[in-house]
Image 1 (spheres, rainbow, N blue to C red):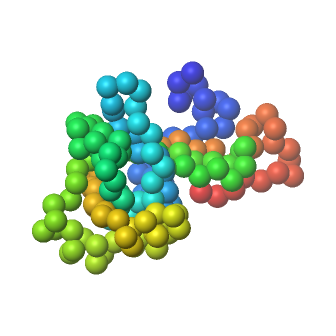
Image 2: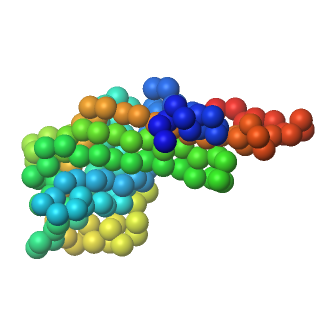
Length: 163
């Protein structure tokens, strides 16, 4: 089914303001980068600059698939989503390019970046292992959401939630 067809069931396309709010409020998503086989999907913490770029900190290893795939990728996608209930959820899909931030730019960017939330395991690993900062430049963004019961399940006493 198309997005337009799913609108009959209560799904809505998000406008740019709603997409911005979602990116500003969330800090975790899933990065998809192409490989020779199936795409590599990685859950990641991110920081959004409020305009057109996400930043990720990678903990480097001897043979990191994430680093190899990211360094080779011409295009990547990043999915940010939030599910509160079966009738209250949102999903933002970003398409763009990913690149390692050069060392001479990294320190200035890290002063701005809020990476206050990330899994403890990665926090501890970053204390002893090398890390790299990656930049995801957003070329295209789309979002869908459902924030209320579908029309056929609503009663006179149920009210819709505001955006």
